[in-house]
Length: 370
Image 1 (cartoon, rainbow, N blue to C red):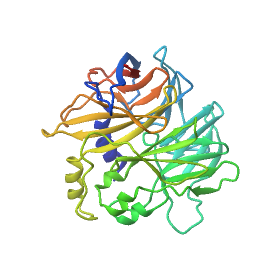
Image 2: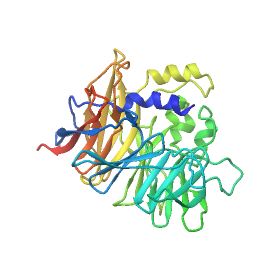
Image 3: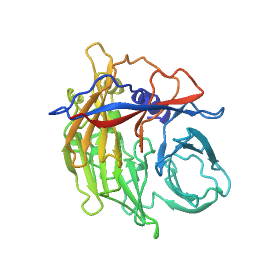
């Protein structure tokens, strides 16, 4: 499936607006609007941003399609710096698909289609290149996922990259692959894969191929990777020391994602089931409030969609299930940034935005109400 098709397929996932909330158990928490902000969009910036991460407490960095990193101060709500990396030449990267900014001299840039990882600086000079296809067995390598799905993570002297198996997601064999978590040794350049794999339900049951995508966040406090798979009610938690599939229930109040009758390459059947199914998608860790946010989509009887936030505490107990305003699937929005977490709370695009000059954002904050 092309990147363009994938982008439009997931475009509807980003627009959320709070309407009601409900807890699992006693009503101890709620999500409330803390404030709204707007970030300027310059003349060369596309009105939709799909890659980004937070630096420190107040800097949002997002990646443009033209290999430009945009630096926003969330307090002043200003764009204060731009860096555009070369596509060609001795310091050319072709297409940047993901990034991790550590400091002005260490910026990790991923080129997924060429299986390359670069270290560059703000002067746009490449200081080292890693070959991500330098694997030891005879299988094809996996392709690195963008920041939208999972940000690269540096742990000690290693870079962890979420990867998508280079197999056909319509086949059962795809889900037996244990190549979804690549580790690059920054000193030797060696590549390995942790034995993290898809949940067993993917091997036992056929799902629409779009459900093969997964999302991952990282809890730096406990050095844990947390996976959200689109067809699974559960999340998977791993760490460097014991990288096994440990599952925790993190389901929403909805019917489980729909299955196909069998593994098939019939695209119409995949699209038909996908279009009428509930599913899960992204997950984020909030280090300020020590909670996780998992997002889900529920199809209502009239075909409209309700977007849900499942809030888990640090031990993966569900403390809140928060419903969002239901909207028709044909709804389109002018400009938006995908959700992210910063010091003030959970940042979500404002669905009522009517301008192409600003990213208008709602900040939700978890609150105790007892």
